[in-house]
Image 1 (spheres, rainbow, N blue to C red):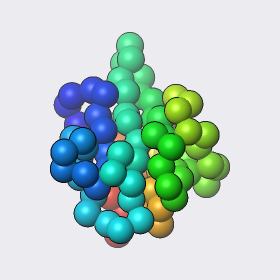
Image 2: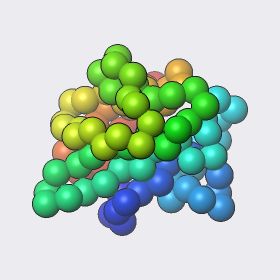
Image 3: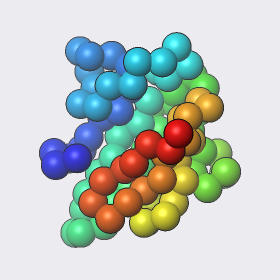
Length: 88
């Protein structure tokens, strides 16, 4: 990811990073970079977002760090140094 905020979802029209999966919302989350730190915001997605197994409240920015687990529907991702990597 290089452009922020970065929208992640299943809509090619609205998302910068597209996940073609039935349980992902058109616009699932946004990732922000502010002053060298990264934040996640759930965009009121249908199936929700978990950060380290804790539900993320819609429209609330939460800081993410290297090693954090982001779960979108039943897909898990691990936050890397500069990028978010898909797990399995």
